[in-house]
Image (cartoon, rainbow, N blue to C red; front, side):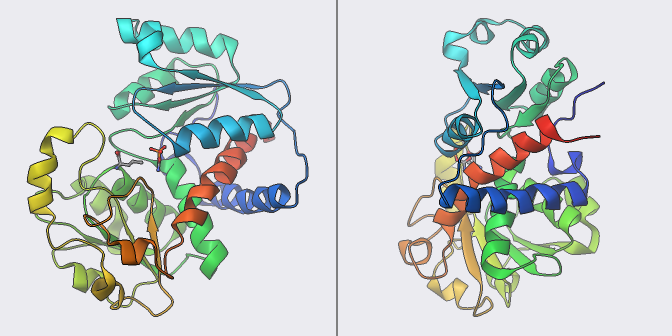
Length: 303
Ligand code: CP
Ligand code: NVA
């Protein structure tokens, strides 16, 4: 039987996504009550990181340990991947030794090639194209604070990047509206926007995008791998900072989210990210619960 993978939010049905997100909230309660819950005893997670990470690494590693299993951190610096061993060979070998694999890499096609040759589930821990794990935690955080996201309106302010692409997929799968405020030249991929249909719209004026929305979210202007473009991007994104004036245009009950790490004074002011509407710390904590729910789903679900 071919394993299920989680490379984008489109790999799961809307019902499966809702199941994982609901389970993540249950796992949050279980942990907060101090109960032991170790259904993955004896299971091993392999984690391949070609880019830096704080949240994703700790959430997966701590999460797998809390579920009773263990995790192995692998970086190209100290594996044969960094010396040119093909991704396909690495996938074949690792998947004979571990039960589930998470990869953070650059090109999304690396993940696809890896998954194609893996005998066990592969999870996208971020690629240049998508960051689906983050969206599980984000939707969980929104719903814990404000109820179902279905039918609500979200404003994305900033780069048409991996996070933006995953928000588009989330809008499609979970049936909410997404207004994307982005400077010309930094749009998300047109075919993704098109696939979003009436749920997704592009705006050049952040104020227009944020008007009356229930959630405002943003991300860094230069993602990992774009460090050399940082200066040009600072210029292009001037006017796209989420500040108090912008937040004031959203619904009175709107929450602010950021996948982190954040640059205060660039894409968001300190007053917003550290202010009363921000739920970024719950959002970050939920990476732990959401990844545990995802691993449980991929390893224990009955067909
Ligand atoms: N948000 C996120 O993925 O954080 P890390 O880069 O620290 O994993
Ligand atoms: N867009 C950012 C997200 C980091 C979690 C990046 O790819 O660097």
